[in-house]
Length: 249
Ligand code: IMP
Picture 1 (cartoon, rainbow, N blue to C red):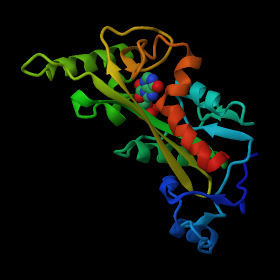
Picture 2: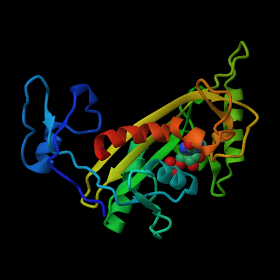
Picture 3: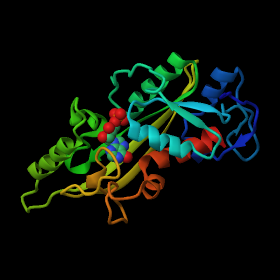
């Protein structure tokens, strides 16, 4: 079972306090301000931690559930997805990755009365002013037709060809991971991987937009890479690394 463990000293340089923990937050949650220490802004004694156990992967996307389970593997966690638990899939009504990740994590944590981890992610194309972004899944339509969604990206990029014939193929995969507790507390962490879009799509190993995305420094698309090669370099893994530093270690 996942339980918050309190009281462990966690000393962090101020520059690392990007996980949302500040003195107001500590005071609100734990009823006292953080103790001041010499040479550092604060010593964090109160961050909520996750003890190994069961964690809900708040997703109905089997590709994401697999990747979240793989990231948690080895840390003593077992994951069960919101789909396996038969939880309703909340409507993604926020207009940011973070807003949507938090509403999914909170909905699952409250419905199951257990901590839940959600991811909101997508492809942001420089040449399309960040589209499809939070609409990445929706571009595939109700039938989740990613071949059509990738075609839409390619057509959009071509339509934006510059007068000298240049197509801006730069893009990012973005992921926000949110961990929510049933009492409504939620913490969020972001990961971004930069790359180039290729056409035609290549590879059938991944999901979503993987076949058109080549991460920086690589020649294969995410769709051509074996999962164990793709996973450590993904936006999801980068966000998870941050979450781990703040909530698991
Ligand atoms: P959502 O986070 O459920 O709104 O869905 C995000 C969508 O972005 C997914 O359905 C995929 O189409 C796309 N996406 C997110 N992460 C990846 C990835 O690692 N590879 C390929 N597509 C992704």
